Image 1 (cartoon, rainbow, N blue to C red):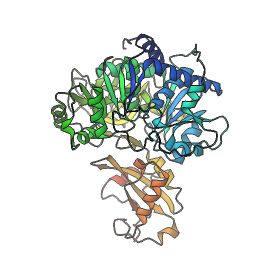
Image 2: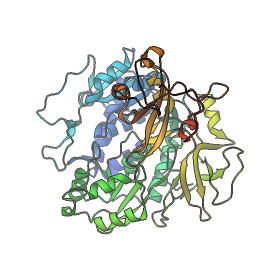
Image 3: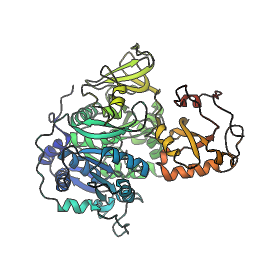
Image 4: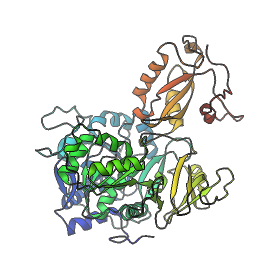
Length: 559
């Protein structure tokens, strides 16, 4: 496989090694505030002890419900030091979504940013034994800011909303915690992370990922993408995304590098960070490159420190032309497509070799991992260049979905993980991702599961049935379109044209309702009303028929 830089051990032990070897080196820079490796090690120890003081132990689940911040890193590493399982939550989640995750995992603790505290408190629902920690993003800001802080982060002197009853202040809990005694019997095969994903179909499920898997994929990422100990990385991609976690947290700790962390992407803040902190390595989404270059004063920034930009094509494809424009803009920075991977495998199944970039591809399988292309209907292995379903086999096997044995079995074929994605492998071994055979929809960089959106839509008092599909969108990559069958009483009050589009604001009112009940990226951009939806003989919804123009295998539209 891979020779690990400091041996086969959990990443939090890599932190301990760096804290001893380079205690004063900056691990995190937060808008100018430098947090050293020694300080990060101590603070994560304190969080581990705070959890232990409240009765948590190995195998308990700690949910992280916040945007990028130092506290996210502290909580992630601290929980894993205790042997607890980290489960990232999307900070844009609504009550239904968050409550589902916390309940399914029986979370024993939730660490929430202050903007999500009330929601987290409601999602916990008074369950005994679940502790709520509150993070104020401004607590670790410096007195003098080096980078523009987004409006969502309260500054010193700002008024803070009151916390729900029995909430623990994160900073106060760390200050009160005593010394932490390490857990002696953590096994590399133990589950360390529960990442929510759809798999090939269905509602979101928790993929179980081990310490071993995290180390393997992180080491492969650092090796393939040329991340070095003296690099200063920039992290604007959310840490609750598996790709953001690998590049913004894991790879930093593995290499002993420094990360400049942004609460969220902001083009001006990116320019300020690169110049002020001499950023040398950046992982981002391809649309961010255009946004940064379009800043009014972009040309006034000194960006020559930037050595590598690894980007993922979401919404905007990272073409050679865009890469050339970015290289000219930065004064020579190398840029390339990052790779390909699944949440089930801790991502990074294929990565672009920094020393052998091939445009129009997603790189090569990492050392030890195998990829193959099969006919999605017959399972026959296809030759080089032929498109088919991508399947992955790793030396660190997929552990499965939490409490979903049938879904786990459906993902595996003789040790190969079925991705549901379509791609091709050329004669040089480079993978080219083509599209998604499965019904998951990618909006910006987010995964959207049709069944989940449909389930939420079905709770609307006027909706009898709903189906959701993804349509190409130049800005989002894909956008959701919902097909809705109204209940009889509601259908009598709506008038639509011959394409199922309302002549009044019924669709807009339903979209506004969605904005209140689901994450913004899950909200349908358009709604079409129907008398019925296409279904197979067994009643299974046939979403693909909704995407095919001219095929109307259902009843007449509402007139």
